[in-house]
Length: 213
Image 1 (cartoon, rainbow, N blue to C red):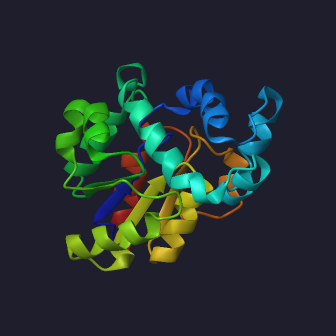
Image 2 (image 1 turned 45 degrees about the vertical axis):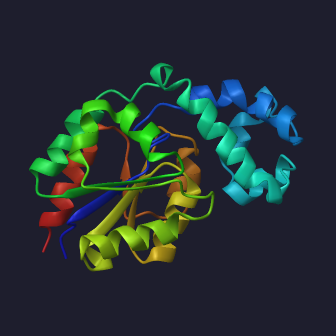
């Protein structure tokens, strides 16, 4: 069945926010009482899933909602310094022109997401933001229902292990991009339906996949 709806993640997929995260994560650690991230363990942690990262950094699980709210507020003040990856708007426009509907599911606030996307925000038909760390599957299901589609017609595009896990839990296909937070090998090991090495491959890949018999 052709893909009719593409659900995008924002940070690490469309927005180049990983450098900002690395600059600020240890200040957040000090504020909320979890272990600071050493420079020499960043690459190793990129190979781990979210639950493993939480365990290794000794993040109190009960503090996760507070940490998420704090980081959303921080990011709101820094959005002008967190660019979209080159080619994002052209890619999104290519998908829409190819017949796909676009949605955004993000842990960030919708207002932040729209500011960051700028003119490209108008290309999205659905926003469902403010997802908890492990709450994307619920939002995926809600977007699919709102769009009135079968799960087999929907694919999510993200850059983290938890994006793939959420897509599987929601019963939809998933694609992984190789330029975000998680290491490429960690994403490939989960066998997503599609893997994208370059931004310009997304539109061609999804439209072509949608045309397969």
